[in-house]
Length: 292
Image (tube, rainbow, N blue to C red; front, side, top):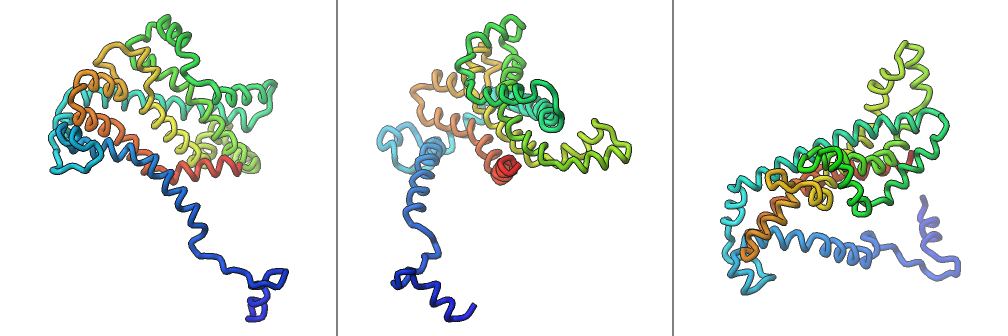
């Protein structure tokens, strides 16, 4: 590019000089993004830091930093058996829901994406409509169904419904991935003697792995933070998940604000770490679903 062409491009059509663009972009965009990030992260940081304070410090100045930093609250919560019981129940619930949603979601998405049959569009629309059906709307009939199945006060009573509510998101994300797999691969695999089931496990699952990881992470984090369904299904304190454990702990130690903040921060830290580690995979998986 010559100096003349650069000079021409630096002049507007009306002859006035064109302002050079700032390399850092629009500062108002960064300001707005900073405000939104502060609004989202501020409460989380307040809870985590508040756990390092004493009740006297919180009463004297609720918004100040710890002076001095107190580790007793976190040590006592980590030494509590109830906390680890709730942690184990949440882990079982989240892992079971994630595994069920991923396995069933991949199978259903494969059929919808790769085969033509009567009612295919209606089935896909039904799963899409499930995105607009929150658990709070169905909580009463869902509780009656779980009670009739004899799954009240049973972790299976929350795992099975959570799988059902995770399937719409799973299928909506995975169908574009599976639909984008070239049919030539399936034809070549068929010529080599690979059946449909073999093609599914050897080709489809590895090629759709970004989408599988994405839906798995979303299902895990959503289940880990679930509160409404466990509240109705679980009445035994030995089966409480962490959200119910936080509620029970806050009721038991209502005057010990610092310890409640420590318990709350420890309850949400695993989900935050898990989400942060796989954040790029989530974004990549969603981009792949949109492109597909």
